[in-house]
Length: 346
Image (cartoon, rainbow, N blue to C red; front, top):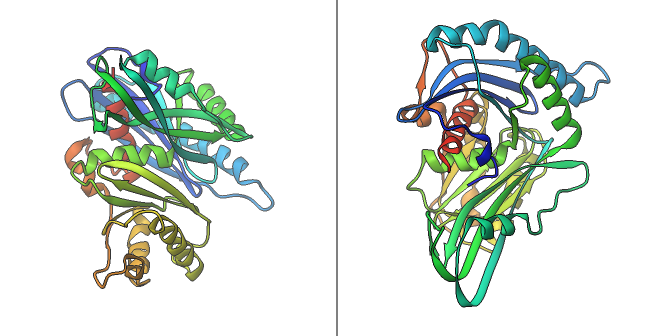
């Protein structure tokens, strides 16, 4: 459950523009969402972020975003209209990656001697408590990714009588200067205030649970940019996030930082043997090869090396539909699945 809930309208069909801002490029797409059918991606495109000499990367990103917006209007809207019969969109979802995002996890505990009823108001209070954002960043989203009542996971917690509740909350924060620039640019281009931002790492973790619902124990190595995050999932719950310093992907320095991150997690938890690698599809093959050659099995204290699975759009293909001549990137597909789930939340 996320704090986006009140935003959504109750309608059978909605359209959205999805924008994924990475460190090196920006992906944009149009998608249509249905009440009882798979979502449909009707258009997808990419613009590279190419800083000019002595230019701040934020300025280069803003210029690329403007170019992407123009392309979405000039090419995307007609393609969306041709496929769906309407060029109208209800909302814009923006995913922002490092170095402009922070993803954190915390657990709130509610415990009383006498039984109490777990309510929406109680949940809202728990989410607001200790909601702290670093200086220079703005809170974009807080999503409840797990509710444990009296020691048991509960997917429909409201109305239950309990004495102990544990709530796992995933928070997204975006660099304030970037959040303002992105919102202003998209508002000017598309004349809408229905613009929602979320950190890419948070979105991808939540979408990945949809793609691999039966994987209860896994590591997620999110290398969708110069900075890497490691997320550890145990018994279906996200229990730890570790950020890895940036470095040239596949370099010895980069591999060393990943190993240090894994070692930090291994100090507190046994590491699962399944590792999901999230990266731009043009880079995922080389990253997978570099990780497999790095002898990571030493950290598992086992001769059996971990299995590294480079997640691609083919893993997501059965969960959505794609218009003819449209080739969305993995990140765009994950955004589509995430947004579909957000629409369904009450």
